[in-house]
Length: 59
Image (tube, rainbow, N blue to C red; front, side, top):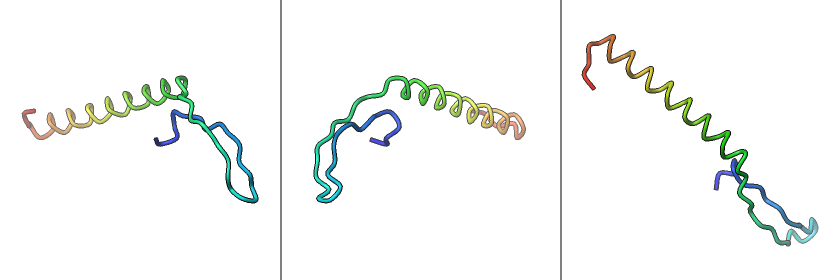
């Protein structure tokens, strides 16, 4: 759980630091993160292909 695609909901007693909570999947944040991940992977792929062409490397 990296905290990007989940929401923590619950209660916390500040003096004793006890409480209860639940994690809820955040589909909207997950979709945004998926788009970001795909864009980054595409950029890495483009960079690798550029280097391969520059140095005449086969993939």
